[in-house]
Picture (tube, rainbow, N blue to C red):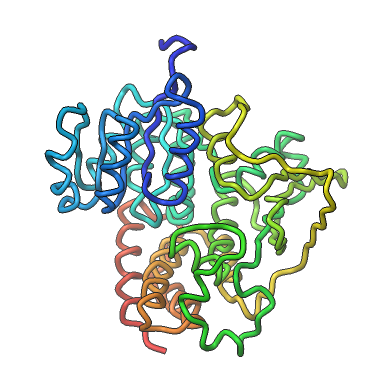
Length: 389
């Protein structure tokens, strides 16, 4: 058993993305005596990953793309950093005996396999890859239960719920309320969004994120995926989950209890706070984030989401109620639809239409295996790739 004074050995899957960079900022702030980068992984950004390896000196790095991994060979000579490749390389790095916590932050379903492997190996998982639970929530959480593993939320909304839930017992929860900034198109009508461009969709008013997550925020698909994630992460009934728009992004989510009390978590919008909490839980440590200054005038606004204009949100609630393979179909179709919107082959409002088509036309299975989910994922990607308005 490792001494208490030894650092927590962390693997960051998706270290070149916005969450991964935030995690490295946390590791730098806490220092290697508390949090040490044991391994860093990315999909294909080998140049940035190489620079990170030079700065943090992890034992291993891994790239899901073998061609990208091949380009790193020789560039880290003398640093003692081993280079792994392919999805199996990510999984191998995440399951090493010395690893304590795995931050799963690779965007999309690509992070599912490594996350599954980490949980199966008994690692505490800090989960930023919401697609993992959207696609395979029941299977993933059942595996975590069998292995006695904590799955700690990194999304600001789910971290807020996780923190607020400590104010009561599970049977005392009436509902949880996830907040949404509303994205760059808050207040826009369907007519105004007919010709929305990728440049406009990527212009988030609060958060700085990658292109896929930014578009998901613009369509409110990010919130659709988050309600599904919350259902499995916290063992809630669909009727216990709601969404409100909160443009200031100060209240990150709330929990309502049966006695009428509402407990919320507030902080300035900085992903490093929930990232650090997931990496140091149950401890709270001084963070690199700014404190909320309540001595200044502050207005907090809340409003219901426009479900007619942002049709993706209702897809999320439908999938949450159906379960089974519905999440795999929605997630895969959305990833392809977002990519097609960004390359100009479909319009902004076509994204929920393409997702709806995949959801309605896939062969639904209420109790799929992991292999069955992979097949639905592949089918939905093909369906969305050839979908036409």
